Image (cartoon, rainbow over all chains, first blue to last red; front, side):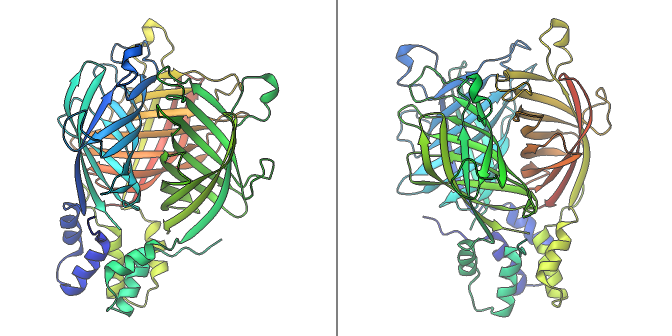
Length: 184
Length: 184
Length: 184
C-alpha cells in the first residue's frame, strides 16, 4: 500500500523550508505530479439479448437510442464491468467498474460516463468516483475523479481514457490512466 | 448553525504553532474527525403503479430491469425521497433527497446512486451532492459527498449507507451517516 | 487565458505575511471571491419526434414520464446543448453541455442535472463537470462544479442556474453563472 502524503501539506512545508519559491509555481509543479497513479483496463461486454450471452455480458441497455440520429443518441447502458491490469478480458479483475454511460451526439459518437471503481483486493480496498464526457473521437480524453473512499479516502484527480479496441457495439476496451492529485 | 472552520487552515495553524508535528500525521488525524456530521434516514417508497399508491409513493421506475438476470440489473429509479432524523416515514422531513439509483449486478443486488440532499429548514439551507456505489450486501458502504451549496458551500466528505429495513422492492430505508471533512 | 492562483496557497501566504488575521475569516473572505467566473447561456431544444425537428433538436427524451403525476416525474433527457455567451440560440457556441436531466417532483416541476461543459475554443480547452438539483421554481439555484480538466484542471465551484426563458417542454434557456473557488 502506497503511503499517501497530502499535497497542501507538501506545499506548506516547501514554503516554510524554502520561502523564496513562489506559491503559484510550487502549486503548478505539484499539480503535474500525481500522488497516486494506476493504469487499468476496462472491458464492456454489452448484452446482445441472447441466452448464450448471459454468462459473458457485463452491461445492459436500459434505454434505447432515439430516432434523432443513427449514432445511438440517448442510448443508456448500465454496467458492472471487470477492471484488469492488462488488456485481457479473462484476466483476474483487480476491481469492478459500476455505473452507466450514454451516447450523446447526433453526427458522430460521443458518450458520457459516471461510475465507481470498486476495489476489494489485498492491494486496495475502497472506491473512486468518476464522471465526465467521453469524447470518443479524440485519442485521449480526461474525466474527473471527484471523490474516493477507503484506501482512496477523499481523493481527487483525473481519469484519462484511451480506446484500446472495439468490436462493433458489443465489446469495447478502454485504457484508464487514473492520476490522483489530492491524496490524504 | 455550526461554525465551519476549514481543514487546511487548521493544519497550517497547527504547523505554525507546533512545527515539530509531522504534516502527514496531522493530516491523517484530521481526516478522521469530520468538521460536520449528520445522521439521517432516507425513505424510498417506490410507486407500485396503482391509483391508491399515488399519494404515498416517492419514487418511480423510469427504465425497467433487463432480461440479463433476475436481480433487476438495469432497472433505473428516479426519486424525491423524504429525509428524517428518526426512522419514521411520517416524521416531518428535514430534507429531500432528489436523484436516482439503478441496480447493476447479475448474481446479487447492488445499486448505484447519485443525488442531492436539499435542505430548506430553519436549521439548514443548502444542498449536498452525493454519488457512489451502494454495495447492498455489505453492512456499511461509503459514497462520496462531492460538493455542496448554501450552508454547505463547497463541502466534501463521505456518506456511509446502512440498510435499516426493506419490504420487498417497494419500500426500503437507509441510515445515512453524512461526514464532511472539508468545510468552508 | 487567466492566470490561476491556488486558494490555499493564497491563504498560506496571507497567514505568513500577516499572521494576526484569523484563519477562519481569511477562508470565508476568500470563499466569496471566485478565482474564475463565466456567465454562459444554455439552450435545450428537445426533439419533438418530427422529421423537420431533427436539424435543430439538441436533446432527446430517453425514458418517458411515469404515471405517478402530470409533472413529468421520471422523464429523462439526454442532451448535447450549445453554450453561448449571449442569449441567442444561433450565436456561435463557446462550449457544449453534454449530459442529462430528469424531472423528479410530483406536485410541481423540479429537475436534476449532471453534465460536462466541453470547451474547445481558442480561449479555453478543457471541461467542467457539474451536478446537482435544479429547483426550477426558485429564482436562482446552485449546483456543484465537482471537477475539471485541461484549462480547468481540478477546478471546483458553484454553478448558479437562472431560468432565462422557456417555451413549453420543447425549448428552455438557462443562464449559468459559473464561479470557480478552487483553481490550480
